[in-house]
Length: 158
Image (cartoon, rainbow, N blue to C red):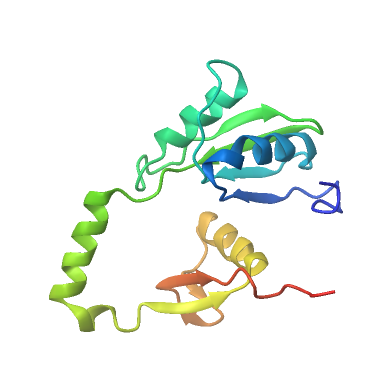
């Protein structure tokens, strides 16, 4: 894991978008290795043990559904290297997806120019931090509507 966090003094943003069977192992590694002040966002599902920090993380993740509550719930955890913030979310409900699909069918031209930015994961972190701090909804001098994170962008092959 030390290769993932080469700068142990700088907090990191960790996104765990994992298959259900590997989430706990990945979460455990992140809790042990992430630098102090890091934020871990658990997207992958998991079945938690009946007690302990994984249960609290599971409950925190489960409480953040479809943008509710409007202020994201987080859990503060003392990780292997210091204090961490852990959050997560359950994504979009079937009801919200169905409603969105209906709107797209009824008004296809309304969303023609919806995807306005495609960025690397590192740029996404900067943009999301800017937005969370109440910054402008203009990114790269253009209004932000929807942003796509290209997980391949910015990678260096060896």
